[in-house]
Image 1 (spheres, one colour):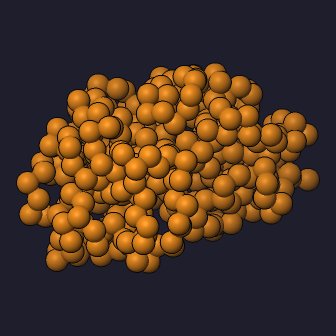
Image 2: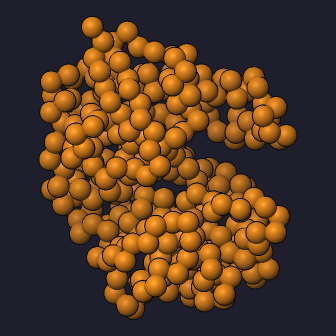
Length: 320
C-alpha cells in the first residue's frame, strides 16, 4: 500500500501534473493542499506531514533550537533572482543598486528569505543595510494588517514600523518612501498605468551577470517534514522529492510545447535555456552547498542570526 503524505504548498503551476494525475508514485499517495500563505511550521500542523517552508524561517528555527520534530529537506520549491524585486515609481531617478544608498525603503517582512537575498545584492553593490531607512508595513490594502510585523527587528533608527500599517505602495506614491522590496508583484503591476517599475531597467541582464558571478539561483522556500514521520518512514523524503520533480519536469515540458499561452513565453524559454544550465535547480545538499553557505553567511552579516552557520548545520539529517 502506498504511504499517504499530506502536503501544504502554495498554488504553484508546476504542481498541476500531480493534481491532474498525470504523474504519480507507486510508493506514496500524495494529498496536496494548496494554501495562500505558508504555514509557519509543519511540525505544529496536525493536517500535514510535509509543507513548503521559508528557508529563512527554517534556518532561524534551527539557530534558535526551535526545530523540534522538524526536518528540512534541501529541495527548493521556490527559487528566484531578486534584482526584479526592488520597485520604484516609473519617473524615479533611481536606476542602479548604488543609487539606493541613503534612500527610504519599504519592506513587508524583514527576515524573509527573498528579502535577505535582496539585501545581499545591496551589500555586494556597496550599499550598507544601515545606510537605508527601512519602513515595515503591508504591501497593499489587500494585504492583512500585522501590528507586530517584524517587531524583534525594530530599532527606530534603521528599521521602523509604520504604526498605521499604511500600504507601502501608497507610501511610495505619496513620496514618503523611495522604493520597495516586493517578492510578488502587487495586483495591477502589469497594467501600463500602474506607475511602478523595477529600479534596474535591465534587471534581467543584471540577474544573468549575478548568476555568472555566483553560479546559483537563490533558494527561497524548501520542503519540510515532520521528524517523527521521517524517522518512521526514512524512504519518504526521497520518494516525495522524485514525485515533485517529476511534476515540475512535465510542467516545463508542456510549457515548451504549448508556448502560445502568452505571446512571448517562447522568448523567455529560449533565453532561460541559453542562459542557465539544464540542472540550474538541483536538489540535495552537495549541489546546493555553496548557495546554502552563502545564505547562512548573509543571515549572520545581516544580524538575523547571532552565530554564522553553514549548509551542514542547516541540513544535518541526510534525507535525499
